[in-house]
Length: 526
Image (cartoon, rainbow, N blue to C red; front, side):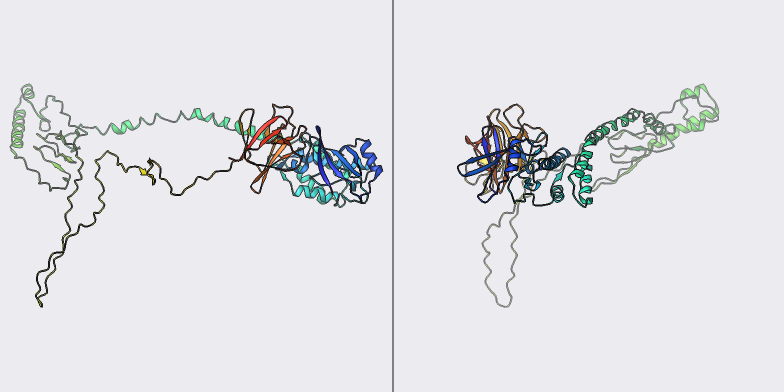
């Protein structure tokens, strides 16, 4: 079939050129040209010399194949199916042969806003343009369409159930199924309700948060009673205390409070001269003398020198001997008279300094002369300097090592990054449009990128220019090449100042000037 598109002013026509062997049905042609039949495209008949043309007005409409690109929602599917069914029923009312209606998604045109379709009826006798049963035609559409998964797809199941269960396809029955589906409220609010529920669920979870400050921080002070019994220095002389080097003992001995000693318990407490005068008795006198003699005996004990500590080894833990200073290392201090509980100060540890050892020349092995045949003493071989082994530089502690910078091979200078020899930066292909009005960058990130002012359909919406059509043009890509297609726009599309034909791919190269109506763009590959 000789199909083409023609632009006349603001109108776009789908044109069929009548062939020599075509027999035109004049009655059907008159019915199409003199009536506005619902669901069928307005028809014009023209003749230029001996060539006849049948034209169909498809201005501001796109093919259903373009409309079904990507995910198809319920509105688009029902709009197209209702439009096809209405066109078939209208053709029967106007006594037109339904077999002359062109059932091809490339030649069924729809409005992107209302999703209503118009079909082409070609009044040629002896042609079967339908080519297949309507039931099979609708099944093929269902099988080859990707539906929107963000909405409830019950309508898809209902349509498939009818198409699979009906033994004979009936337009009237299928129309009832579509009307029943369309009468059901759109389940789109359900996802919105579900989206509202998640924010409501965290709200009841927030009330328990004020209860979290209530966790008993008060039991935490309970460890205090556990620490209280530790400093029980009530019996400093009966239990040895631990001595930590460089620190005062954890439990320093508390001097006992001097209270007047009683005659019965004087053997356990030290009696001072004041106590002896206040409570003078024979028993207290003897006790005072015994305690004084014990002190002198303890002071007369000579100090024992600590064992020598080997060089390079740390002293091991030991015990503090009465009458001698406590050792500086960790150990136990035995309390007693004359014992100094405060350990001597410990000198700070000095980190060892790594002093590089001088390299000594390698020792040459001595060769013993053979006793059987005396030979003159061998001359010592010339000592060639051995290859210097890599010695890691000694760096003082706390100072970073400097390894220098990588030098470019051409000697042009130095760089902090390593240069790869022979590397060439490859230009990344990032096709995009630059809008001349505001220098906006529009990335062409889809195989079919749609431009127009219909928000529910276009990938890039131009809402501030009324001369742009709802679906003005598409930028398509295949075989690493890019093309622009005018989608029957009202004010047309221009490439480098030349208006292009609708529904025809026009190639784009880097720097191509693109104009949609009066909106200018520039196509760039990088």
